Length: 113
Length: 112
Image (cartoon, rainbow over all chains, first blue to last red; front, side, top):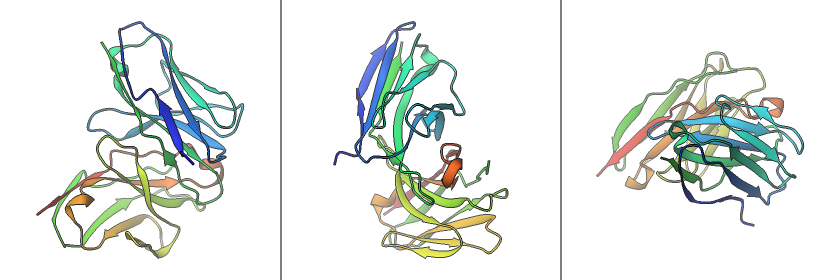
């Protein structure tokens, strides 16, 4: 049982390049989330998916797209990376019964030059 | 959506009890209160969760007054390894899932 896994762990992009961050969970959780965390700041929700086939915007969705490929996988895409998107990206999942909590992946550290 | 307010930082010494209070004045009837801990370069991890009164586990206690407009995380006899950022999160029940916000958390520094 690996929990929540994220790939890659580190990535450096040039402005304007695109990339997809991958996230997978093996806990049969319904909800999945993408957060970003800037240095010295808290987590901000980018997008979330309450179930397979559904996605909703969070606090900071601009510049990102997501795909809930199946129940296990939730990807985050940057179509045209900008330096302002330099951050650590965390994926999380949650079963969604009352009182359930989120389980986080190890994060992807992204630098956009 | 319930917004939370926590102190930005706190200092303590090894062996002391630490209490971190979170304000959440517009908490909804079905909202739970959850606390997460985050170490540098890691994702947050669950510490404790409660709905009302007091909850205790092997790591911490959570005190919630009757009006539920605030909550206090209590860490008994902290050690250097408790140095971390602590987040209070309100929501995480039913359809509110995904709409809870983490805020900036409280940075706890434990000194020898």
